[in-house]
Length: 429
Image (cartoon, rainbow, N blue to C red; front, side, top):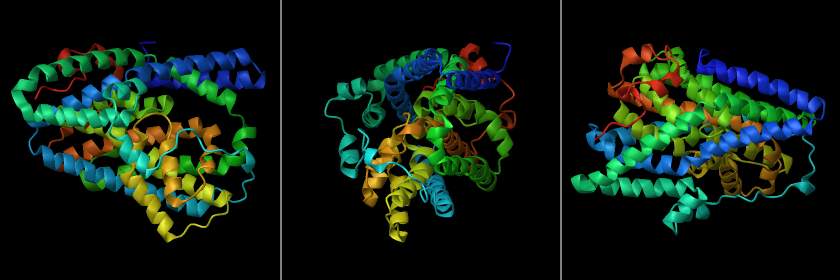
């Protein structure tokens, strides 16, 4: 398989997975469906295993690395600003498509079986959930939002302490390098993981299940596609004077892996490597990408909640006014961190529904097809996470445009065997 580019390997896994999924469903082969589920589940589980140490060490190191970045505060503010701008555009598109397609009108579903999901979100839970009651518990439970909070506090403290904290920072750099190396091995299994994930999805979700939600599913995919292939290219050209084709050539491995893995955090090493190959300075990329992987969610926190809220309102016969649509936009821009970079967007959806006063049971109607929707949502998330650092670096004049113009000419997986100077490790401050 090494003679095939990584993207071709993923494509082969995708095609074979679809074929096996159809075979399992058409012939009712429970053993094959179970095998595909196990293979895909193990791949996602391996990605999740690395999330707590990866997020903590990456953010600690990235915050400390800001010491070596000129105008670090301005870069951080501009990154946040562009996160907000693109999120606002994305949620506006989600609302617009929802108003045009009316995804919930004419849908007949058994509402008696709709129950609120076990994981729900509210502003109170979101705000109080940021601070862990037990730092060890945050890692044991895999609460990414709390881990991000701890990492930001620890990183800021280490930055202010300076030289006395250098042994601790060095330890974090070493752990980060080890976790990233191990995660690269997992990422190399992505073609096999793709086969299992896609195959199980095809075998499990037939047309009889998708048919009542076909309009909603199509709306989500169309909304994400518009953001991916219309909005982002316009932003690249208008704000950064950059060729969108070169951006997608460089960022595509990360977008592709995000589509099949459904995890922004699990894709983070590939995203960071892609951003660096696009010419973004490593010191800035090591801050912007981990930060974006936990807070920049145009798919899960903007397009999807907007469309889902309209869908639920229409199914339950609730009228939404202008104020409600403004609330959807506000929640999407401000509450993105609630998604925390893991698979699924249930917490963000329930946060939106509760803010609008819509029945949380409406989220239960969409749980069955959530894995199908999560693929395109996560791909959109990761594309946005790569876009913003690239645009900010271009506007700041720090983007290596020669590297940008040559992005995509080398297979990303070759970075595993690259010299130490080229590997995905943040530069010491």
